[in-house]
Image (tube, rainbow, N blue to C red):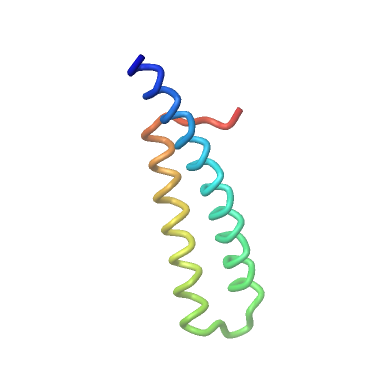
Length: 71
């Protein structure tokens, strides 16, 4: 009984992790293209891009540690 619940919770949180990972990936790519297309990007835009990249790679490493894959 307990094992089933653990597996169910893990699956639910893995799905949430993958959804969040996809959202952060899109956000990071948007920030990256904004910086690339800007002639003289401000410090705030550069910081937002770095922050988006850091968030994405943090969740990417977490997904890799949990051995979550896209099906």
